[in-house]
Every structure is written in structure tokens, then in C-alpha cells.
Length: 176
Image (cartoon, rainbow, N blue to C red):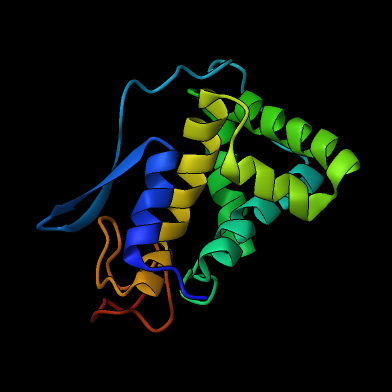
């Protein structure tokens, strides 16, 4: 079953997100006030196991919307982004750990697939919804996931994710 644009936009609205069409492409907008981070000053790094668990949450987005094939973000780049979001203020470290603790508890009771499905259907609180789930969804879309819905461009996407691809999507200067 392929997800239509209409179902995609409806799913985003459940998360408190809206979609606007702008000259530069689609953009996600938050509806209502964005909740504050729980501990924005607490910086640190997730363990490699925690990063792998967060990667599973990210991959679940592609599985739900059948857009895994169009998302160009790999595990290493994902880990770099997570590190950036946890090692500097405002830090998402507490938010990520809260989500992972919630999922771990639910997984013990219901199993991994059910725990992820329930988390995506109804996140426990607005902070988890906004700071983790919605941001992972946007990350997935920005890195090519939007193409699964027949879209041509998305704000922030120019021929690929922000990494040095080989070959470059444009004529670049050769490195010395």
C-alpha cells in the first residue's frame, strides 16, 4: 500500500505539524506553541546502543510511509546529527533518553513492533511528539523521503543531503 499525499499530510497533522507550499518547496510548520526542552543545558553523548535504538525509530518512519528507498540519510550521518543535537546547547539529550526509556518499557510489554506503532500513533506527551518524533520525521523528509510522495523538492534539499557526495550534483571545484 502506497501512502498518498493526502494521507501523508493527515498523518503530519496528528503530530501537530502543517505543510505549506512555498516557492522553495514544501515546508513543515508547527501548529501551536512548541513545548520547551526538558533539560536544554544538559549536554553529553548518547551511547552507541542508544544511537542504534534511535536509528530504529528513524527507520520506522520509512517503513510506515514506504519511503525508505528514497531517504538518502545513512546511519553514520544520522549518528553525526544526533551528536550535534546532544553535545551543544540547547541539547536534546534528555528528550532522546526519555523517548528511549519509554520505548524500552513498552517493548518489554508489547514487543518492538507494537511499541513503535503505538509511539507513532500516540506519543505520550507533546515534548516527545515535537522534539523527537516530528524532528525525526522532518529529518527523514529533508533527506529525500519526500520523493516517495511524488514531490520534486523540499526546503533544504539540493540534489542530496548536506554531505560531500561523489559525484557532486553540480560542477564543483576539485580539492587540492
